[in-house]
Amino acid sequence: MHIAAQHNAYIIVEEMRKKLPLDKLKRLILEGDKNKKSAIEIAIEQGHVKTLDEMVRDDKAILDQTKGGKTVLAKTAIKQKHLHVLEYLVQNDIQAITMEVISQAVNEGSIRIFQFLVKLRPSLLEQDDCCLLHEAVERKQLGIVKRLVKLRPNLVSGYRKDPTDSTALPRPVLSYTDQSDEGKEIYDYLLPVIIERSEVSDIRQHLLGLSSN
Image (cartoon, rainbow, N blue to C red; front, side):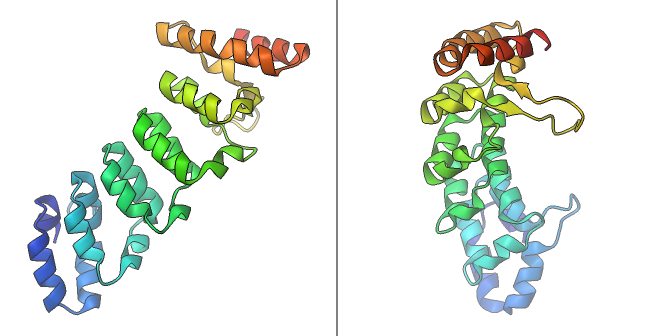
C-alpha cells in the first residue's frame, strides 16, 4: 500500500479495495512503514489525491484515525504546498481547519493556502487569543501580515504570550520585528496602523515592547 501511495498507483488501490475486507484494508492503509508513515501520509506528501481518495472511498473516517488526525494531515499538505490536497481534506469538514492549521500556513509563508483557509473559517481571526499576526511578523511574512491587517486590523493591538515561557510578559506585535530589511519593512507598514488605532499610552507600550526586544 505504501508503494502504491508513493507512485500514485490508484488503480492498484482500487483493486485492493474491491478484494479485501474493509478491516484488513484499513490496517494496510494505517500501518506505518519503516519511517512510521502511513500510506495516507505518503499520498498526501506526494500530492496524490486520486490515490488518497481511493484509500478512503469506503470509509472517510479513516482520515481521522491516522496519527494526529486531520490536523496533522492538513499541516503535512501545507508543508508540501499541496493546496489541492488540502481542499480535499477539508471538504465538507471545515472544522478540520484549526488555528494550528492556519498557523502552519503562516509559518510556511503560503499566501494562497492562507487565504483559502481564512476564507472558510474567518471566525478564527476573531478569537481573543489569535496571535497569527505576531507569528507572521516573526517569520517576516509581509504578504500575510498585510492580509491579516486588512482582514482584522485590531490584531495590531494584541499581545502574545510566549508559549515556551509562562513567566514572560506578553509582547506587542512590533517587538517581533528586527533590523533586517524585511523586519524594517514590516515595522514601517505596521507602525502607522498602530498609531491610527491606538491611544497614546498604548502606542508607548508598543514602542517600549520594541526597544526591549
